[in-house]
Length: 127
Image 1 (cartoon, rainbow, N blue to C red):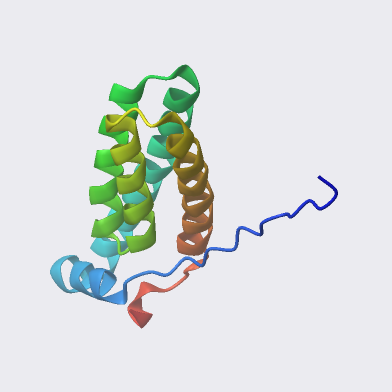
Image 2 (image 1 turned 180 degrees about the vertical axis):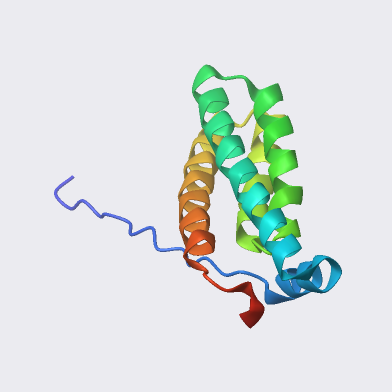
């Protein structure tokens, strides 16, 4: 036990530009920005709820929140976040406590980075 390896968690956040383009085409820039802002608020709320439910071991609510997060993330092109939320839902459904710990932490990291990345976008007309 002399060597301790520290793993770097460096997952890039990428937005699917096609999802943003589709929203913009359907709703216009102002409408798309409104949807994205509301979605990001909901992402933040669900991430907080998922984390609370994980610590309280409320897997049924955690599962439901993660499933809802998948749809929201896909709508605004955050595909890696959607994949992470699916992993959380799967582990919660199967009551896999060890894996759930890992995927909830990954989801929270991805969510934080996604929120930052989306808020940093000043102009969606580039998508």
